[in-house]
Image 1 (tube, rainbow, N blue to C red):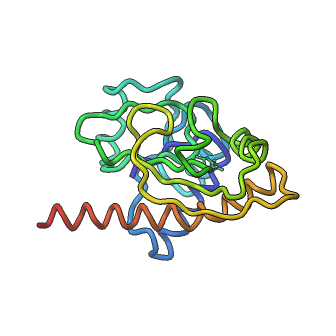
Image 2 (cartoon, rainbow, N blue to C red; image 1 turned 180 degrees about the vertical axis):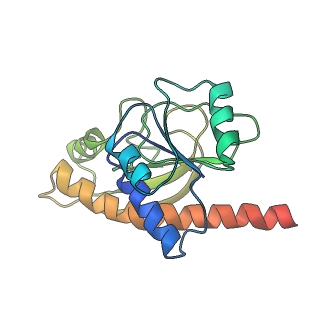
Amino acid sequence: MAVFVSGTGRTLENFCERIADGTLRARIGVVVASKECPALDKARARDIPAEVHPGTLTEAALRKVLERAGAEWVVLAGYTKLMAIPEGYEGRVVNIHPALLPKFGGKGMYGMRVHEAVIAAGEKRSGCTVHLCDGKYDTGPIVAQASCHVRADDTAQTLAARVFELEKELYPRTLDAMLAGARESSRA
Ligand code: GRF
């Protein structure tokens, strides 16, 4: 997998732990960010190749990064740039969004803004969505969701923490199933 980050790298850390305990049967070949960020330091601390590519990667540049790393999957883990889908990677570019898509997605809907919008809309439930990327913001096919209650006294922070706990289970589990499915069909 090539893992794309922009932030704190909690998702990356979680992947590393799940790979170590065998729940995510995968290898991280490279971690990519559009700017220096704590997530890149976490990659370096684990001796995973870490690269900075400022701005939006062209399809050709992205392909080069993936081929160099031997990556078969592109996994977005808090990456905030739009991602082109290189030829041959259709159905292999995956993202997680901290809400129940198709609601509360789209350009500018990331981080605390998502949870603030969920609370402002008076939603009773929120959660997270693993979806395939289609070159637009948060509109690709949904693969899996997990949900939780929105409590009357929730702030964006308390809701974000509850949703992230769901992400820590859903994302590695879903990726593992997707990767295993692909291995299975390439053997058939
Ligand atoms: C999570 O909210 C996830 O839904 C979103 O990015 C956040 C994780 O960022 N895509 P990080 O792993 O803490 O950097």
